[in-house]
Image 1 (cartoon, rainbow, N blue to C red):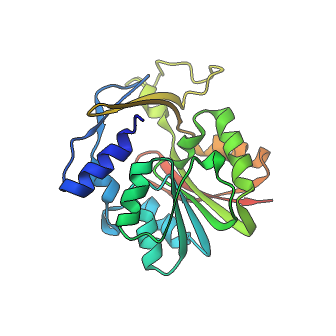
Image 2: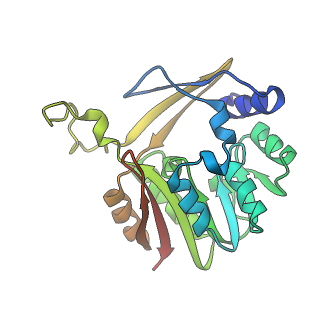
Length: 234
């Protein structure tokens, strides 16, 4: 199975180093993800992530947990957290790092229990892939929520990618295809993966969430068009 993230996480855990994960998209090329960042400490986390962790309550599901940096911190704080990831290698490493509850599953295939907090960080909205996919994701997440539960989710407005120096845009932002819908290609050694990935601006997420039956609250803004939102059922 092609698993760039899982292979990189496993290599870094075993050897203390790993080459970068290479990233190309339909808008950008020759970017990379430093694998050590997936093992970041609380001190190394951006303020948006710290804010999200401070808002976690009750039983927590960490969706797309990767190497488990958020789950470990929540566990240390005494919260009952389940780390969810589709990568078998990532799951194995999280178990070896000492996370008590780790589940290998795609979020759409997971329906075992309900939680007080669903945590979706590192552009958690991206899991939806497209605007239509985000709507489906929010519909599914509703089935995992306890009474008075919350979804903590972050994303970014990538409109800045298309802006010229004179303020004009080199893509039509009013095109029928939302500009935040991207196609990603990741590679790490002999592992490759292609998938849709969504960056959604706060107003767009507010509208989608409201149509899906959620209240939207903006909790925090980052330094580069990123933000953290809290969603609760109406």
